[in-house]
Image (tube, rainbow, N blue to C red):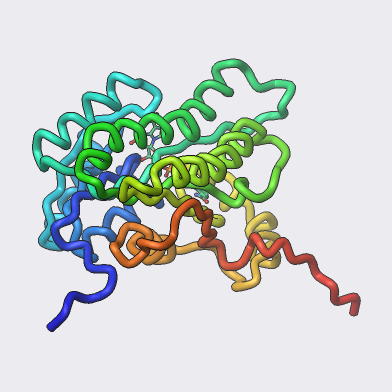
Length: 262
Ligand SMILES: NC(=O)c1ccc[n+]([C@@H]2O[C@H](COP(=O)([O-])OP(=O)(O)OC[C@H]3O[C@@H](n4cnc5c(N)ncnc54)[C@H](OP(=O)(O)O)[C@@H]3O)[C@@H](O)[C@H]2O)c1
């Protein structure tokens, strides 16, 4: 029998920030599709549960301590993955954070932490993997993490919107630069998911109802929703797709407003 579409057997994937939330969901999906996984956190002990789940799927799981705000940590981490596996086929730059405040109250630390994690961190993780692995091996699938804020601006999270808008253009720029090197670069933009990062919003029933009303598919994102797109973008079969930002958001980025007046 021929190879199934989207089979990641034999591929090595790094998913940053996979101790919990969307990163852990997508790491499991890549493992289900056959990839061996490098999962990362700033606290290596927090990776025990996800490593167990990946091993239960029959794949290898390497826990890696990584802080994407620290360039030495990035270079060391990517080096350690190369030492163990000798290649990196897939990089999913999921690690991210947010701070909510009025723009006039944002400090330099707020800006540096949010933009440093969500934009600079994705850039330097990607260039480290490209330099150490993907360019020499002439193959790579890079997935950057965007958001609905790659399309829309929202008050109270200005640095986050600036970073996620930047990520959309980073995907386009790197896709152009690396198009002849066997590397594709795309941006997966999740809609609204109830995780540690969004817990305060989701605890608010009125906000939750407002969100669902604004979403064409009438629900928030669930754990099984982002993985299939991540698997596609990580696979050989996405070979002619690069530089794109694709939302997994139940249609939220249609931007539709109610036109019914009765
Ligand atoms: N939830 C949503 O609705 C939503 C929507 C669009 C986009 N996103 C984005 O999707 C990604 C995952 O979000 P989530 O909601 O699952 O968030 P989460 O539950 O807060 O998880 C964030 C992950 O990022 C890691 N991380 C944070 N700062 C890091 C740093 N400096 N270095 C390395 N890792 C770091 C955390 O790891 P440790 O704390 O273990 O180190 C954690 O595993 C983020 O980039 C987020 O901004 C989320």
